[in-house]
Image 1 (cartoon, rainbow, N blue to C red):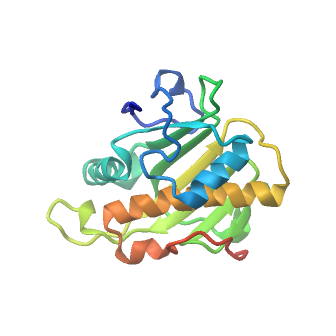
Image 2: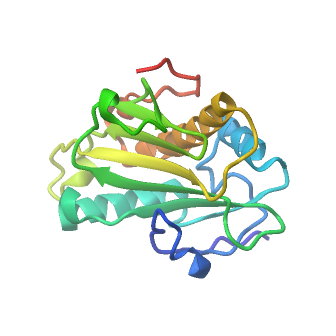
Length: 208
C-alpha cells in the first residue's frame, strides 16, 4: 500500500523539503495530476517510473488549508501551501515541486522577467524551462467564514530543481500542463466559480 504523508507548506527554494514527505509509488499526487499532468511529469523526468508525494489529503485538504490561510491571514500574510512533490525513483529530493499561494495582484504580462513567456491561461500564465506560474481569480464562498463570496487571486507554481532536458518550447508546455492539472484540481475543490476560467483539459494556450 502506498503511504502518503502530510507535510507543511514547502518554500519555493525547497529549503524545507529535506524534512518533507517521503516519496510514494503513486504517480498522480492523490489525483492532483490528470493524464496530461502525469505525461508531462514523465517527460520532464525522462522516466515513467517516477514517484510522488502529496500533502493535505490531495486537493480537498489543500483547498481547506488555502481557505483557512485566507480567512486567518488574508493575502499579505498567508503562507505558501505545498501541493505535490515529484521524485525520480533513485532520488531523495524532489525534482519537481508544485505549490499554491495567494497573490496581491496579477503582474503585467509586458513587465515580467525575460526568462518567462506569458500565456493566456486563467488571469495570466508564465512559463520557462524550469518553472510555470498560473494566476487564477477564484470566486468562492470558501474564503469567508460567513459564506460570503470572495475572489482572491491564486498563484499556482511548478518548479524544477534542475534544468530538465528538452527544447525550451517542450519544457514550457510540460510545466504549464502540470500547473494546469494541479490548478484545476484545486479550484474544483475550492468551488471556484467557473473553475476560475481554467479549461477542463489542457491545451497549449496562446501567447499573452
